[in-house]
Each structure stands twice: as C-alpha cells, then as structure tokens.
Image (cartoon, rainbow, N blue to C red; front, side, top):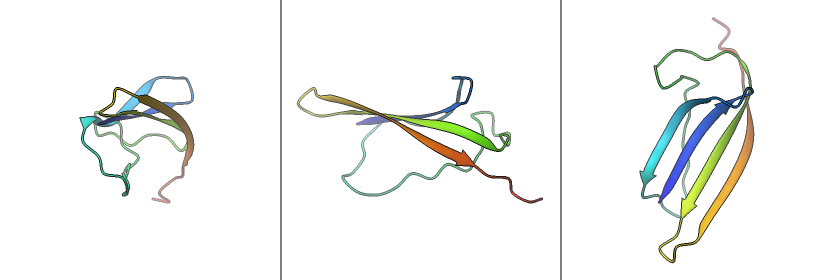
Length: 73
C-alpha cells in the first residue's frame, strides 16, 4: 500500500497521485503537472513524498525532488 503526494516549493500539497493504493514491486507513476483541481502548475521545483506500508506494519518514507518544466506553449 502506498500514498504518493506532490508538494510545491512552499511545502503545500498540490497533487495526490495515489492514496492507500496497492502497488507492485516494479512500475511507475506519471504526474501530468496538474494540481488536484486539474489546473496546470508553474514550472519549478517540487517534492514527491512517498509513503509505503508493508503487510508486516513497516512504514517507509522518501522525499524525491523533481523539476517541472514548461510545456513551451
């Protein structure tokens, strides 16, 4: 099980990519650069916060920096 949330540089949650979802050992998640309200976010630095919950009760957490680039439109 996992939660994956995107935060802006100010520490505000801008997108919940998944909540309490069963994930496999491999694969990927795609973030389209949109907020929870489906509006395009500004280019810049964001943090992807991942929490995994094992069947044994073990919780692991990661913070991963990502850069959101402009679309060129």
